[in-house]
Length: 116
Length: 117
Image 1 (cartoon, each protein chain N blue to C red):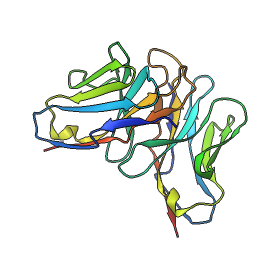
Image 2: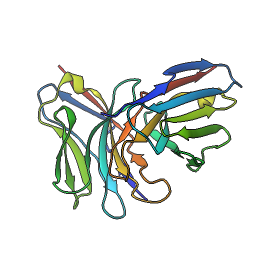
Image 3: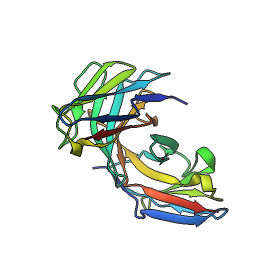
Image 4: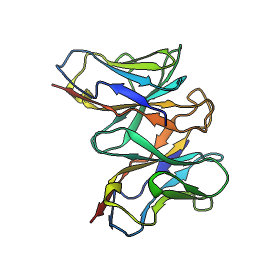
């Protein structure tokens, strides 16, 4: 079965500092991995995805993530955090087959708070 | 990017009534839509996968008679919470896949906050 784990409920960083939101995955076969962001009382917005190719994936709003097969990780990073980055971040892995092709399995989310 | 619209964004109803939530893909055809429920401690739970023109596939533990899903067209899926009770109060989010195959990202609606009194 596919699953992802986000070990941190909360990440706090100062504006201008680099940020990392951690995600590890457990899949059978090659993973399709995603990061989404959610602002209060809103739906999820797509940030980036890893399907194949370069291990470093660049996404929206200056975010990037590094796929590490040996560590089964897909951590989200940003070199310089902004206060407006404060939100809830979800890592997800895609189901690759079966009748429910395309469904996502989400981590429990990490609340990122960037203070001025 | 692709847009998925959910309506209503907020709904309050009395216990025992039914509530319908609509999910529309505005600028693409979505053969598959997914319905999620988000609990107060933020985790997202997949409820069902909705395929256009066929019956929805429900996740284990989700009552199909309680949460009726209809995907009558390539741009519209509906979730009806029947005989709603306070424990059904939650944030419901739909999503749609914007391209065929399984490598495309899902686009999410803005969510619908259901409060059952």
